Image 1 (tube, rainbow, N blue to C red):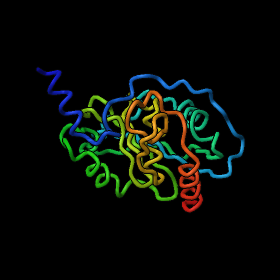
Image 2 (spheres, rainbow, N blue to C red):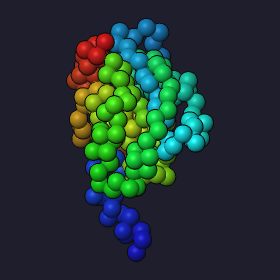
Image 3 (cartoon, rainbow, N blue to C red):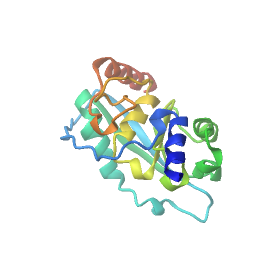
Length: 201
């Protein structure tokens, strides 16, 4: 019965937010020394109070930046560079279980004053503090749960943050199904992201 309830609840959530990214991405990295479209990335660790710090996430920021650049963006002449690493104290955002079916709205509201408009802002919260949420993408902001940082959830939500909508083509990064097959952006999507990055800079 509990399993059926879980399956039912999954279908109530926006499909790009469902925990559906089970298989690790296996993409041969391609790195570019000086991509034409570059954007700074701030990594923002969400904690519930000042008694917590970012070390609980055990995040390797250099490896993370290599992952998103090498596996998804450098091959399209787009590059992300590490900006700031900071902590956001916000108990409302930290525990999204308290905001069922309102996750995107809460993310938007609770980050209005903390994100920088001259860069990409990636917020990290614990996967255990959500119900079936892998990530959320909004204007220049992406929320990624810690268990999904090194999966195709990350480029998918960055795509949303740079103006992309869903694309129902299997294997496309912005596809909502079979995330383990997601590997590529198409040329129109690359153009959209490229131009968005140039407009931000």
